[in-house]
Length: 395
Image (cartoon, rainbow, N blue to C red; front, side):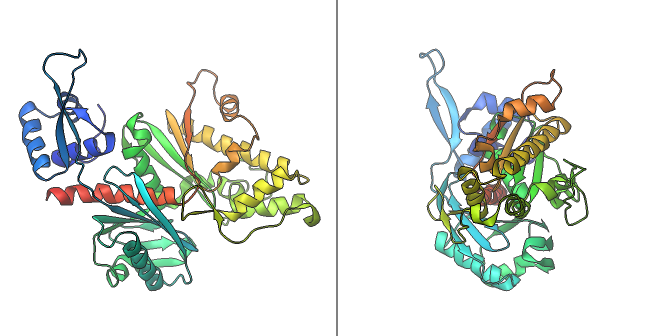
């Protein structure tokens, strides 16, 4: 039986309709293990609170009594998702069903916690002056109320960002680890609609993953540390991560390492110029990572050693995916992060690589490439905000 998205029966019913879309009463009752009487009582409560709506739909036979279907309330609601990096703040607005609308980004002029929270408040107000809830995602370990244990890219440690935010913004907000936020989006609005067991993998400036098992995100006290980053991919490599591990994922699959390797492989005179300014993406208001754009320019320009450097990285990404798929018993993988475009540059076939690295009797792994831009991570923060809002809307 699929796990509930939220534990309380009323919240679970609302969450399932909001995240999974229109469903019949019998299907929902069976999935959530609710009696007919409980289903009727909860349905009335959720309709009265304007979280869901009941509509009549034709049955499969096209005649006879209609089937009553529950769908998300059409009442407009806005949620804001924020993603903080070491140098930029990204923000999006979404609907109740996490459809992304507006998006924007601002450079961080300062990493001072109060300055960052003040700018976060400004971004929230520019996106939506009065959102129903805000989710704030950052790389590091944090509590939902904003207490930060550590956030390395921002240089933060043992501080209360939630209290600082409330100096500038008094609306409800939830803080979340950024990789967990992406996993939450997938659990509710992405791969979780079709799979109970899957993993979300992030590759870019860092490496991370989230495991969803039987419909639930697996947690441990230190899961926010990006543990998969220290999995050895090439122990014979001379390159190490900051902890001294030779050839681990964190050492080999990050943008700083790849740009350095490219400069070592090719004479400077034969490398394309590096654009430091913002590079527009397909999402208005959101830019691409200039390092990734430059790596692609090196490949297109056929710079000496470029294809070899990037093919090696492509192989290492596939090796990481194969290990995660088999160790976590995943049916599918979603992949996001700045380095996702690397997998689309004609450096090899992902399915063939995964097949060659796994036992031939194992079932093929379904995989999906998600957007490489940070507005997708901010959307994950918005999914976290929606999850936090539902119980409060029923209180």
